[in-house]
Amino acid sequence: MLKYGGLFVLSALLIIHPAVAQRTDENAVREAEDGFGKSVGSDSVGIYASGNVRGFSASDAGNNRIEGLYFDKAGQISNVIVRGTTVRVGLTSFGYPFPAPTGIVDSDLRRVGDKPVVSVQLNSGDYLGTDLVVDAALPVSEKLDLNLDLGLYDDEYVSGASGWFVSYGGVLRYRPVQGVEATAFFAGYQYGDEEQAPVIYTADGAPPPRIKRRRYFGQHWADWAGDNRNVGGTIKANVGRWQIAVGLFESHFTKNDYASAYYSSVEAQGSGRSTLLIGRDQNNASTSGEARISRSFGNGALVHRVLLSARGRRAEARYGGFDTLDLGQATIGVPDPQPRPDFDFSALTRDRVRQMNYSVGYEARWRDFGELNLGITSADYRKTVAQPGRPAEVVNDQPWFWNAAIAVTPTRSTTLYGAMTRGLEESGIAPANAANRNLALPALHTRQKEIGLRQLLPGGMKLVAALFDLRKPYFDIDSRDGFYRVLGEVKHQGLEASLAGQPLAGLNMVIGAVYLRPRVTGQAVDEGRLGSKPIGRTNLTIDANLDYRLPCMPALSFDVHMLYEGEKVANAANSATLPAQAVIDLGARYRTSIAGIPTF
Image (cartoon, rainbow, N blue to C red; front, top):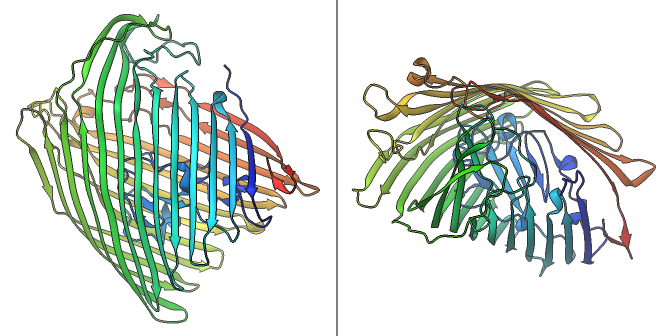
């Protein structure tokens, strides 16, 4: 099958009031405030996502939020209950207290309008993968409303692999009095027969030869199956000058069946050693939450706010115990079906993390002049790794972190800002080829500094730009004694920019770009064992989106998406690269309805 550039969407609203917003109106280009990252329903724009913000993972940095409250994600929240996700970096992250380096990724759950709405959405897009989503938005009373959602997905991937998913969830909101809202949600999905494309390691570190697109060449019995679930609740209250926000969340992701295929020592003609890593009962779980209270002082032009916050998480992972299967010599891109053997699994490793962050913050907002944000955090971190047949390894850390940001407004159309922040991230265990193999590693202390501006341009356009410098410790095997320890640092320095707005009537434009200079320093680089550029990073990414509705025919719209990614380093020695690529998507939509019900 060939990839289809367009996305077919059929949506019918079975119970509807014409003024109510529906899934047929979801449009990330029209809703995005900037080009850094925005998803609305199945539509997304921007240069960043939760796994890649300024070249690092916002999830690993502890920067996931659910409607502004801290959330430690073990498994992805099912999209059926998520209205949209926004990536906040630089000036756009002002208003989110106690951020860690990288950026904030905030998810908004679905909300209900004034009238009951049931929507049925059928999509068929990339590689003819098909999904069916049913959403019921039910206002039970003036104070209580309910969303119920179900999704069936038959996904197809570029590698020729496929998988099925059954998603479900619901959101309940209760507003007992004005200024108080309680939210509870549940979401999950079951998945199975999800094949994974094999990973290819070449003998000389150069890119492998080309293979036929959309032909899966792994073992069809080596797939993933399991479940994911997230449940939680929040309470938010504004009582006079006091603001209270509390959230508690439970997140699980389980791989009952797990398989990872790879080809090693692949030669120029495509021949290499085929190996399968088979596992079962791999599990990640986390209980997390935040309690935050703040009070505002002052009136008029100058307002102060003092914040107290407690964030915590208890995370546990079970992994390992794999059986390794040698499938012999094979050629990449060519199916080599073999019978399913019996497996010999071993005991699992248990990894537990307990972390509490206690924070105090101060904000000052001076109308038409600027804003100041300050915060200090005391962290209590404990990690325990229990491997079969070995004593448990324990790591403790009680660091202090701080964040500071200031923004000034010299003119009504110009805002300048600067910010610095510190954070804590996990670092795993030492690899099997190190002298201190399987040792639990200390947590990473990360740091970030940035300066930037926001400029309002004529015609309602908005430019946001920033220079940033983000650094983390870099672990490697010390050539002097074979121990795996911190030997340098990874630093990402770059320039990011966004231009968004409506330059012409009916035309929405969202453009994001980032120039990144990623570098690794340390002993391995100095000795020539490792290149100075991280694998898979590109220096330049540009994401541009246009959506145009004809003023004379508002039912008709055209959209253009352009993505450019620069050259990428392909191996650790930096001796091979992947070429730059550009992708252009063209689309058109004519909005139709049946008996006043939007259908497309």
